[in-house]
Amino acid sequence: MDTVVLLVVVVIAFVAAELLGMRAYRRYRARKEAAFTRENVGAVYDDLQQVRARCLAEKRCFGLLADAARAAGRSEDACVVDALAEGERAHLAALEEFREPLHAEKVDAEARPPLSADVNDALREVAERIDTWSTGACCDAAARARVHGYRDIAKLYRRLQEVEQNAACICLDLAEGARPDEQLSRCPSCGLIVAGRRPAFCTTCTKPGFEFEEVLVEQHTEATFSDHRPASHREIDTQGFFVDL
Image 1: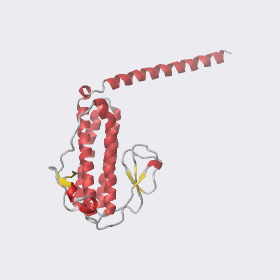
Image 2: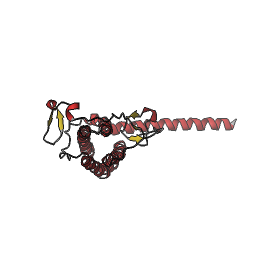
Image 3: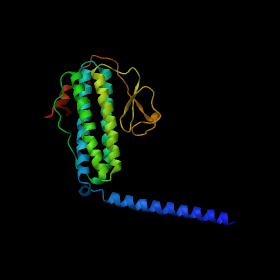
Image 4: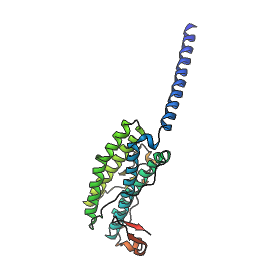
């Protein structure tokens, strides 16, 4: 009998401790969210704005690269580059989660020099720039977020780093003509592109593999810029990008 009573007391104490712990954690999260303001986060806010501007620029750059690949008759490569642009859109969507509570201001895309006329050279330039950012500025931003206690933001930066390094490798492969023979698929959450059989879970964001989207590849065509978007509807902006009118 004494054993049963002791067991009941232990269970009650355990449940009480769990409830108190959950209540304390909720209070902690509430204080953390209340403190998540532009004035309090300091450098973390600046990093978020810079990353947003950078992702906007890369998305636009990938769109330009896809157009250039199609104009060169490399429609298969263009489809892969389009998938890389979708990855940048996924980054921007993830950043929105932190932008809204901060009431962050609108940002413009980072300035980019005009790409090389040769598609392969342009792919190499983009790969080098992406790799430099992912191993440099992105790591620094993740460290600052972690130091300030924003592990969720640091985790997002680490995810961006992995996806961007993957994108840099793909760009280099396309530049060298090393296209994968296997079917490509893209994670809709983080933008990671994988070749072959879809994984059980995304290795970057743990999204279920069955949700991966197939990268549809066009057949080879002798396309030009005007075949996809009339020149009368495009102009070059001051940063050397094509923009829609």
